[in-house]
Length: 204
Length: 268
Ligand SMILES: [Zn+2]
Ligand SMILES: [Zn+2]
Image (cartoon, rainbow over all chains, first blue to last red; front, side):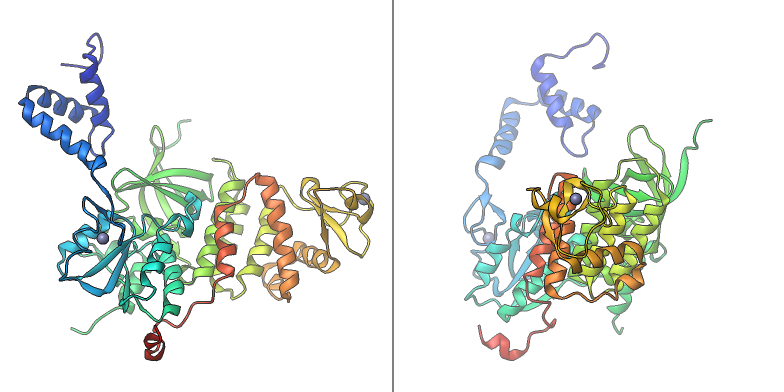
């Protein structure tokens, strides 16, 4: 079956194909295949999928403490009594929390900035959740802020900016180590990454 | 003659925007083609071979493949990384401002090797300087001249009379200085002190090394900044976001020592 030429799918089919096609990693062919799969699938399954998608936007909100996306406020991390309340790890986006949690090495709390300082994209510090972070740090039991913004120019600039704001509060500010990516190739490493990897070398 | 499918050029990355899951659209200022936009595929993955070679404010040799829409970066090798620039907040912010300025004043695919060399020269000086404000003011003047907006500093922009050694006026819409009697009646013009005029004239004729030797007191530095910022804002008809951020940084305390002492930690 082809979508070109004389074949015009019914409006609901065309609409779903178009919507799926807008998702990352889904080309026109995949969108078409998924649409016709759903067309044949049991009504309950399709209903469950539709509800899950709707709930994503309707039931989710930002945690009033860490600004992570959550369906309960405070979020599960902020309300977990086992977490170390003296550490806050600052990340750019909610999605950055997932890989950090997967390591199971970090037991503290988080703070989501919802972006990074990028003047050329029109994003200054006012557009980020920096004020919320500083308010959170005032009169808190936090002793260390771990800056986990991305290791690129804007991530570094944002980290340097935050360090300047936080250090006067007498709180230790640390930055995730920067070095060679695991599974990467020395041959292709750029000089900035390599010089930082050299600076951060450790005795074996 | 058809152009080859693959070509090489030197480029400075002046802007980048995320695209899809792991790609980026780069705005490159190149030596051979002027400003171009190109796609760097998979560059946001840690294992990308392009990675830091196409980071903002990096000077690299690139291999690009022509494509129907945007050309694609296939290989990249850093020539100069300007690392000292990237490890300091003022310098980074100044570099981003410079990049935004170049982006704002250039059109795509209009080659201008002299501008490319100027941008490299500015980045090299920014990376070393402790007076980023002086480097920026001098760079603004050079850049404006290079893109065709060299401010007139010798004759009145209105009556054309030679300027007298006294307080005159700077008028962005006239693209330079107005004499006292013309400027006085021009609502858009702002007073320009004789010292500020002298520094601007000196900078217009000297090279980088000499320009950096000029001593400015706080008032004069602020005046020069205000004049040039106003001129740029008038030409672009907007305020650059990075200029706003630079301004904000000026009012912050300088970077404290990386590890606060135990004593200050106890004070909270
Ligand atoms: Zn939370
Ligand atoms: Zn006049």
